[in-house]
Image 1 (cartoon, helix red, strand yellow):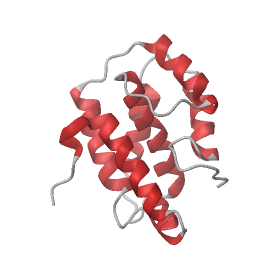
Image 2 (cartoon, rainbow, N blue to C red):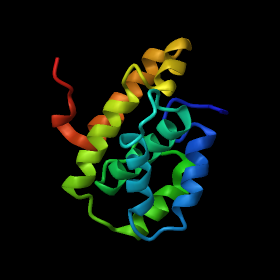
Image 3 (spheres, helix red, strand yellow):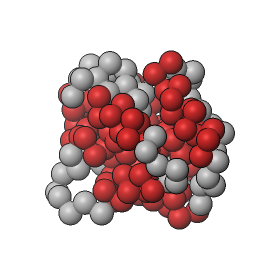
Length: 143
């Protein structure tokens, strides 16, 4: 996977997913992507699924009016969000919570790859910030 940034869209999997997003007028792709992570029966969550789910989670944050830092690479995603105007339901937020748990678990290949890199802590902080944008103050995991 070509990765050039810590954010949700800083890799090839997420950018490919974002291109596919434009084929949808509903949140179907977002939900399906989260379901792929949540419903996976594999012992280890594969990195491509986790990377796509982080992109879907970022879209959820944007739909709630909580975009991340401005980025030219996500301009088309922002256009889709502006045109979509779909409400983020409590059911989607429940799926988001479960997806974050799986992506941040020890059984996540993406987490493992980042932890093996020199930027593991920075990635964890980026995902925590995204989680806060998506889920708000109740997103803090119990200690």
